[in-house]
Amino acid sequence: MLPVEVKPKVYWVGAVDWNIRDFHGYSTYKGSTYNAYLVVDEKIALFDTVKRPFFETMLENIRKIVDPSKIDYLVVNHVEMDHSGSIPETIAAVGPEKVFCSSMGEKALGEHFHQDGWPLQVVRSGDTLRLGTKTVHFLETRMLHWPDSMFSYLAEDRLLISSDAFGQHWATSERFDDQVERSELMHHAAKYYANILLLYSPLVQKLLATVADMKLEIDTIAPDHGLIWRGNPSAILDAYGRWSRQEAKRKAVVVYDTMWHSTERMAHAVGEGLEQEGVSYKLMSLKHNHRSDVMTEILDAEALVFGSPTLNNGLVPTLADMLCYLKGLKPSGKIGAAFGSYGWSGEAVKLINGELEAMKVERVDPGLSLKYVPGAEGLARCTALGRKIGSA
Ligand code: FEO
Image (cartoon, rainbow, N blue to C red; front, side, top):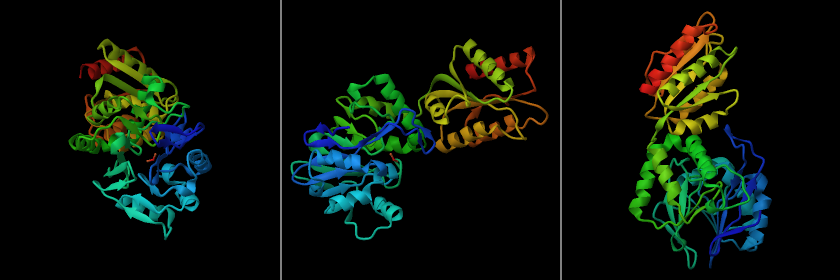
């Protein structure tokens, strides 16, 4: 990929990772990008770096703009390795006068790289850095999504370099939101929010309020992954407002796995009941849907319905995995129910109920367990369960 001018003398110099398919448990089925930004002014600053295997790609991009040794400052907005992995090589190649980071960033850099002698300078919210004609304003965004995270705002360019926030895992040759199909872009942005930021939703709301109070003029948001939002960043700001409030539609997600198709039949019958109530729903078999794609559907669903057969007195491992992952992401304001088939002991529904309770999902039914293969009466009970969820 070639460098791309984002604003006058502000360049994307990152890398596109077309082949990554798993990002610590998140299915990046369309790859990702690691965005780094080079600002050329009287002082030259590089904002973030790239995952280590892409260091040479970033350096080549920088060379097309300036001699890397001319870079004065490195700004570390976030220390997770997809952005900091190349910092040791970058510092060695560039020899920056200063490396700016948050106070938590300073700690995290020490705990990741164990290097003495880097010219670190801690910045806090409200601190500024004059580059020449451009000024960088720093804004700490602690726990969005790491303790070290921060934003860098270039006032003269109305440009927010936003670290992971507003990003998407999507490898494209295009660099801007207005160059790609909008619905696919929003899908990837929603998936990113659901899997990375959902549990920090209250902090996202506070941050959006802070940004609004500061009356920052923003016409472009440049995240560390995926497409850059230019022209109309309100599309993603509004979406973050909705997602952080966990606004839900009249929609249900039925998530299940099955051994001999009994629980699957139950899932379909629950779906019929939801349909009879006019509720939009998705049946998501965990044999065919990755947990991170289930999360995308859960983001705007009001009802969560989980089905598992009883296996070895427990849940099938795929559903246990899904519930463990979901619990960590702290969905709120949902209703739910459980179902499943069993042979002789039938613990699955009880175990799902326990997880729903732990997640504060409001159970609308005690749950439905059916022995071995459901017959017509059993399936009718599943449909009734779907109707009950739908009417709730
Ligand atoms: Fe893209 Fe939190 O790293």
